[in-house]
Image (cartoon, rainbow over all chains, first blue to last red; front, top):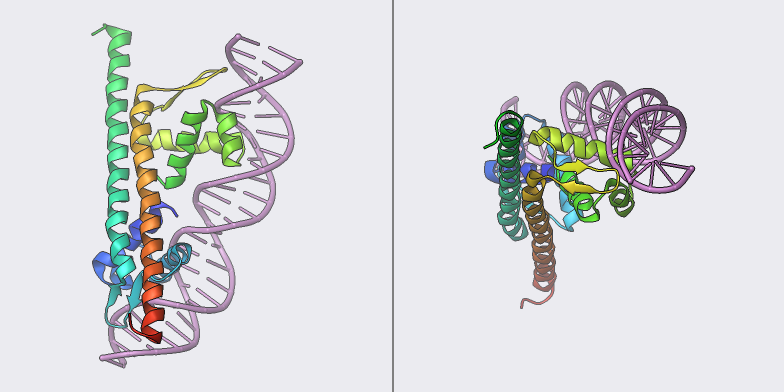
Length: 101
Length: 101
DNA sequence: AAATCTTACGGGTGACGTAACGATC
DNA sequence: GATCGTTACGTCACCCGTAAGATTT
């Protein structure tokens, strides 16, 4: 499982279908379909009830959606923390090489 | 950024070097080196101070380590939640098809 | 028929491994 | 010179796109 799978899954859940989700993700439906399929296989069952008109989450899918969002949110936070720390670090070094403090 | 990068990063941090981390991850050093490089480039700066004898985290690396662990932990929880929900679901269906409750 | 998801098939990027190199103790 | 990380290079998996098929309204 990779973050990509979670991003795709959340998009399908939020858009209520593969077509719209694919458009939002700037990929095509078949690709999205396969990735969700891989994810479902890895987890051991379906996350969506595929309807022709509407695609709905299964109970398991609903439970997973909450967790997936937290993973993605935490991943964003991780990136921000690192970037801010690196900026601070770079600043310190730059000051250090010039004038300390 | 993908979970792979975080798994690799945490391994290097915990093992205190690329060689041991690569062995633990069952990949080779060059691959690991490149993936960490990609991660550092994406975040905007170094996460490790490469010493010949020991590889240590930079301050930014230390900050990122906490966050990365939380992401990976949350990802594990997400998988467990989905698997348990799917087991429950499959169970319900099986009961439902046989004798309800 | 129109919209949706899936299956089938090719192509290109990139993750990976092997080999060679550089650097430090 | 032994150990570590990096650079160079080739290969193969897999992510993605295009095309065709199945299903429902």
